[in-house]
Length: 353
Image (cartoon, rainbow, N blue to C red; front, side, top):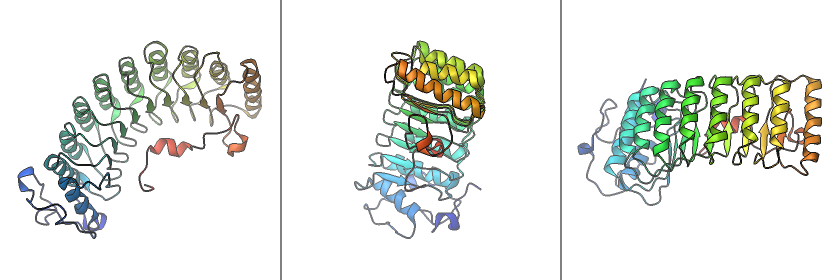
C-alpha cells in the first residue's frame, strides 16, 4: 500500500486538506511564514514544512520507517521544488514502501537540488524505472556524494542505467547496491563505468548473485582503468575460485584498493592462497582482506593462517589485515577493523535505523 496511513505516519494529516489521497503540486503549497505549521505530533508534516521553508537549523531529514509510500515521496518532491534553498544535507527515505512511482517523482525534483549530499533509500521497492530516473538525476545533480540503495529491486537493467550515469557524475563517492539482483550483467555494466568514473571510492555489491564472470569484469576494470576505488564489497555472492584468482591478479597491479570483502563466496583453498599472496605483493595497497565464511576446511584454515605469517615476514612487515575465521576479533588474523558484516551491508545509518 503506497498511501500514507495514520498508524505508520503517526498523525497522518496531509499538508493541504487532510485527504490522504491528494497529491500536492507546487501551486497548492500554502504561502505562509516559516514555522507556522510546525507540529511536534506529526513528524512527517513537520519536516515537510521545514524543508519547504528552508529551516537553517535542519540539516538531517529522517523519514525512516514512517510508511510514507509513494504519496509521501511525492510530497517530499513538492517540498524540494517549492523550497529549492533547503539546508538539508542528509535525507533518509529507508523502509517506506516506496515504488518506482514515488521515486520517479522524487528524483525529478532532485536533479536541481543543491543541498542533499547523503541520500539513503534502502529497503524499498525501487525497480529499473526508478533506477533510470535516478540515473537521469545524477547527470544533472552536482551535490550528491552517498547513495544507499540496498535491498531494493533494481535488477541488472537498473544497474546498467545507473552505470551509464556514473561517468558523467563526479560527485558520488559511495554507492550501496547490495541485495538488488543485479547479477553478472549489472556487475559488468558497473565495471565498465569504473573505467571512466573518477569519483567513486566505495562500492558495495553484496548479495547480488555475482559469479566468476562479474567478478572478473570488476577485476579487469580495477587492473587496467580505475585508479580511484578504495573499497569493494562482494559478500554473499558466488565468485568462487575463478573470481578469486581474477581479483588476486588485479591486486598485483592495482595501487589504490585498500579493502576487499569476499565473505560467503564459495572460495576454496586455491583461491584463498592466491588472494593472500597477492595481498602481500610489494607495492600492494590492500589493508583489509575479508575471507570469512568461505569453503575452507579446518586444516586449510590453519594452512592459510601460516601462509599469512610467512608472506607477512617475507614482505617485511606487510600491513594487510586478513580475516579468515568468524570468531571474536582477537582471533582474526592481523586483527579486525571493528566493522561487522551487517554494518557494511546496511550502509550508512541515522538515529540507529
